[in-house]
Length: 147
Image (cartoon, rainbow, N blue to C red; front, top):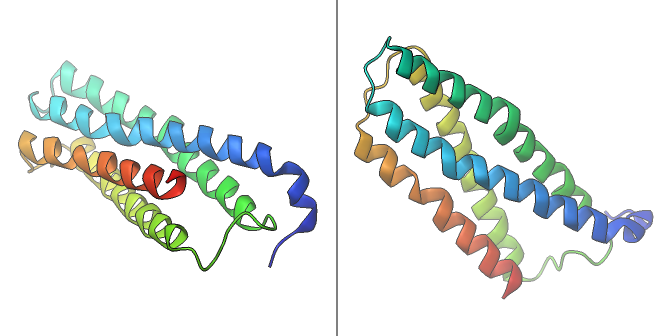
């Protein structure tokens, strides 16, 4: 199903989708890095509490809204006639990567709650490795869409 009138707004939807995705990725890149630094603090200290505030604000004020906007503008693009070739492999690869990015986003939210409640049990190295996941997914998404 497509909506013919959306054809007139295709470039706007595309631009807003790219802007939203860029903001989402900024949060996805930075949040695991904050967790790395948070691991280096002692729970209950002023420094640990400062990281909790930074993490919650990054997630709630930037990363979550940007993810929602990415989905909204992506769906509007899907509903635009001619925007998606459903037989093209790139579309399905992108969809899988977006699903994986969303799952990773959910894990980031859960890990933030662990830090918030001083229950983190994962080492700094875990978050250093986790920090690579959005980078790899980002690269794949850009390559399959552009190339």
